[in-house]
Length: 411
Ligand SMILES: Cc1ncc(COP(=O)(O)O)c(C=O)c1O
Image (cartoon, rainbow, N blue to C red; front, side, top):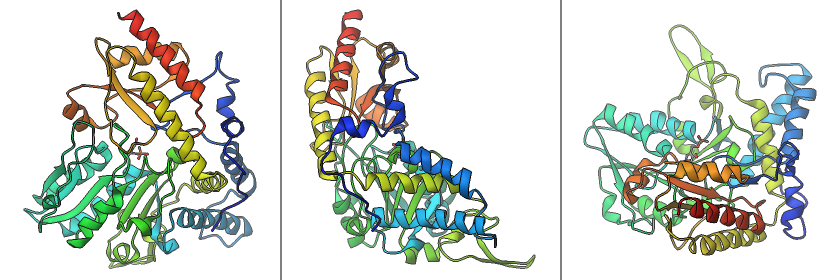
């Protein structure tokens, strides 16, 4: 394990000092950043690791015999080990670096699912998926003449899962661990177990779960798990696909190019070993280094304390927002991550977002790349305030005060 010095207790004000952007020196007023589900901020150690890589080790990896290339390779492969440890994968070969969750899912759709998919087959997703966990399956289903089905959700934004939805034609069950549009935390282990009992492979979209909880892919039992570096306090442009080794071994490459081959002739090319078979071309080396540094950083936090702090943020926001006239929280599942999505009677989310911005509060408005969720709740768009462990209860109060102002303006 790469776990480093654990801090004695979780102190949000101390943690905030690790994030240069939160110091607000470039802003005329304090930044109340509540758009963490879109992307989260980066601690100084991540910025430093990237800078150090470019200043001291910058080189292309794997192929070079010179020491700089060896140092860069060590950095990159070291980051892979950190990811393996962080998500408790069995082997480093099971960690494929991608551009992010979206690319991870596309890789599985193209390389794992497409060759197996026949006319009349089915792929099961849920009604609360991000478009990234709908469209890649839709594309291959259309090509193969297969059907995309979904698990419906109830009025609170919880899955109405029925094992009958897993049929003998189901070739994959892909579902989101934590919904970006509702905050719902799905019972991933139970869903995986139900699929496994029928021999159906599973992919878990962990883009919104990874920033809020420790992931253990072996405990979950899933076949694939995807997440993005930029949502776990690392850089943009890097992400992870975890895949069980036996499955990755049997899958053809996703993209062709350098690095993913063993031997190329005009007659035949043979593929490199795992995970390089899936990493064609020069990867985002600095991105991987930054992601490794982010995971090191997360390893210094007391995760029980993080969970308790985020639960307190969610509770304060839910309680206070519920008192604002005409405000409806969309997504009231029993188990929720720290985000609140809502609409306000008579006010367009875009106007809410703009007024909040004037008050120094950054939230996200729109369909959150989850249009089926918007359709389910009969709204074109919502406003979403999403919290990270560096947010404070005082920031929730600023949000509530700003929303009260919106209410008064549109009264
Ligand atoms: C649940 C979920 N899945 C997938 C994605 C796509 O992530 P990325 O854009 O980093 O590939 C997101 C991004 O917001 C998300 O929230």
